[in-house]
Image (tube, rainbow, N blue to C red; front, side, top):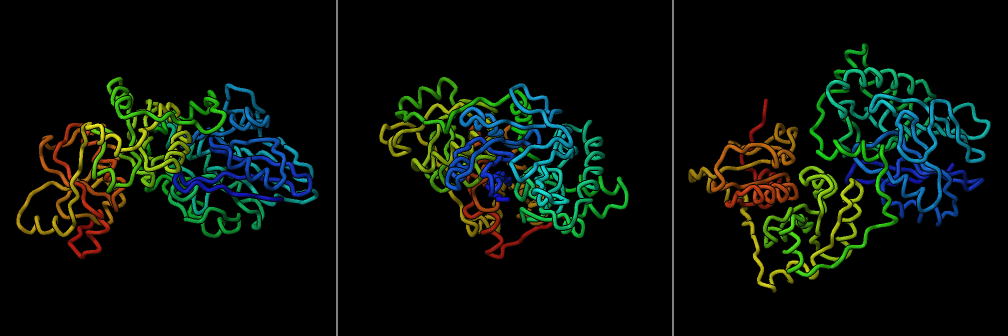
Length: 460
């Protein structure tokens, strides 16, 4: 058996190419939408793709299954209970697919979602699987969350997950476990940073395996779950109905500054993916500032209306390609072009530019020592805030800024920070779009404040 892992660090997920070394037949499990990566590796290894398999209806990324089927003629396999609205093999528990000397057995593993299945790979004549691909049913040190489909389903899904975990842990200790969700995924309950594990390791170390009752299991499974991006509300339906087939990465049209300005007047949104300092030094008024490393794939889906038409501003062609990959992975397909010549071209045309002043942690500390009451807005996640924050700061998670009522007038001075600068760049652009005109960015964020030894308050 040959296994190639494809890790998306920004979404926190893994997808897999699984093949028989003897027959050279291969499947792709839980593919993302930019499928050229899988095809390139398969071709390089001399493999023939026969199937693409989805473990569940994903909420955090658009499945690449239809792209693989449309471009390479592979068969799509998915849970019969997913009720996909396009051609596929509806799979049920105990169904089998053959790669010649390898069998792929379908295992019902509901919990993270109702229709969830896993894929156990059994070598010829072996008494047990060598590996199982568990999607979100069993991950390293935990399981994927059960609350994404609404409060009314959280209890029933957690009950199903309880049964699923105990069924999976009956496999032999040496069975390798390859989850889709991993560290960094908002689909996760608390978990290890490792991406691959074994049944034996999980039986010995996974807190969910130690629960002495279903009630205790539910307490573990539902503890410390973070907020998650708003685009999650849309992608399950997108994956069920069938994502638009792109037939490759979209090629963006270069747009002159004047055309970009005209398109903005028509309601097209601009996304500036440059680094925080570049965005702060000058950007198109009312552009969303979402650095590639924020990551764009998370924050675009958190703060930009789903499927909004977009124009990109980036540093170069390589950065634009990375931005396109991130955006199509979460269903933001309506990409109308990019600013030709970047911000230099925009400024050369004499078009308006917005700048965000940077404030050093030393200057902020000094101003506070002198009694300056400038409001400090911390846009990190709740868990980060609780672990330590600037005294007397205000806290609003960045993803909530587009909708939440803010308790200050638009003209009030605000210094925004996150841990380093990526998320606070997103936040400053949201505040600008909401009419806050006196915003500064804390250079280096909370990390710089803490490194300087300035006071930190901790909750509890």
